[in-house]
Length: 254
Image: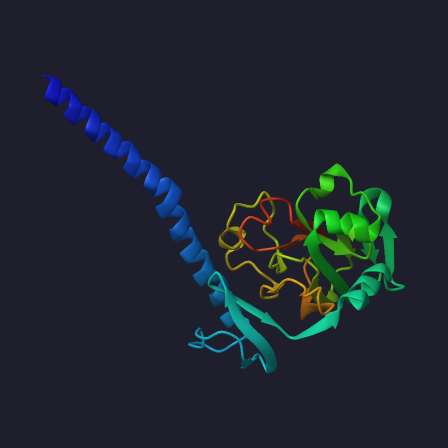
């Protein structure tokens, strides 16, 4: 009887260990593999680099008629078109175009033009507060990594129907990779946000490396998106965990 009890306990412990391994190791690895494949597939579909060119680190590559610097980070495609001085990026953030009305009181920017230049900076929330001297409202969910747009943190963007928006992302984070994707899929977002928004992406950047503060340079990437349908959209960082922690904002069209 004693040995039977010991055997049952051993079987139970093995089951618990197997369950723990499945949830703590296997599932995260599986989601990581699937999200990496999905993200890189998105980049291919948007013409950032041709099919089959998924090997190597660094180098010049052609995609979508443009040259990009390319590499990999944790399996995700990392590309950028150019670098910009950090000081210039900060100046761009502080100088809203004349067709933009900035409302710090409700963390909102209203654009009156249908041809819009939108400069987005990505960084940690402490750096954002220091650069902007702006304390975002609680509903801006700015407790971790954030987007900064014309002095506001994770602001709501309002544009007219039919607006063509030229998006430039500049990563001023000292340690994290970031991207931005435009999607109609609303929050809350899971850890692997890119798997949640699936193919419902209007435009996106690849992941950009952290800024090089020793040289004073930051990485940037640009794309253009047109909002022909009224409604609510979102700008989201797809890097695992970032959107889940609040790195996103609204775009209201119409």
